Amino acid sequence: MGIRSLGNALASFGYKFGRTGLEAIGSAPDGLAASGAFAAWGGGGGGGEEGSRGGGGGCAIGTLTLPLGNYTFIVGSAGADHDVDTAGFGGAPGRSHNGGGGGGFSGIFSGDLTPLTFKGDGPGNSEDPAPNRDTAHAAAIMLAGGGGAAGQEPTANIGGGGGGGTNGDQAPPGQGGGGTQTEGGAGGPGNAGTGNAGSKLLGGWGPSTAGSGGGGGGYYGGGSGGASTGNGVEAAGGGSGYINPPFGSVTLTTGDPGRDPTSGGAALPGSPYYPGSAGQGGAGDPNSGVTAGAFVIGPYSGPGSIAVTPPGGSPSPVPTSGQAFNTAGKYLLVVS
Image (cartoon, rainbow, N blue to C red):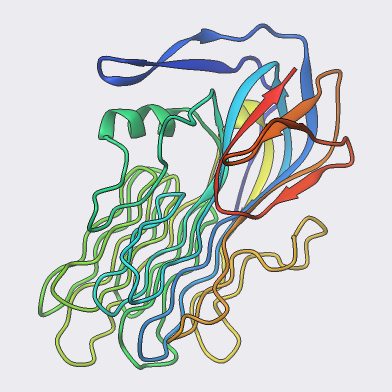
């Protein structure tokens, strides 16, 4: 667990598409702002085919001040089932053979970044181009990391690492590394191939040669498990959380690693802002119990007001008492 804090926000940023991707185009005026409680939980990591558990999503809870302008927030996808290739939101990679997919990060960014996919890696290469991910990474305000997925292995007490938190949790014993504040988690070792490292926003996608778990998405994603023949571990690390200090004060907490019988739980489920089911790691086949992350706007005050446009929907005002969002996807938030 880690805590980072510093005064009020001074400015927010806008973005446009340029020749190299999204480019900053200046700052919004000071003055109007919305200040209050905000929270996020990363998605839970997927379970492995033979019974192992994914790690629980991390959380970020605190107070933010958002000046007048546009913002994008992401609700991270639940880690994919071991037989689902599709990558998810929040940098969640698809599965690799019989390992699960990593959970996606949840959190908020400066600017209208909704043209980006915010998807993870996978067979369809659905992730955003690196220049756009670089710009989104630099615009991060507050993130909670996704849980790492379990590999195919049947060992009930060795599963995916929990999402961050300041750092994501490494999968034991010595498998996919957790994302940190400066780099993605390393890929785990394996006699059939080394796992892929995490990177900015993306969990590492498992090698295509065996049943590796995918890393959780995060400020920096967790590394995938290594590929092994037989009953190798193959579990993945969780992604890291993040707070950009000028926007507020936030506590970052790591989710539970995937251990039977009751682990793989989301961080801080007793929080008054916890929406009831977010960030749970999945268990085995059919990946039972896995849940997406959540983004929560708690009670806030003006003079600015908040409106949110959900995926495929229309703008709707958020009451000053707050509102929780737990459907995976990308949302536009406007302070006016």
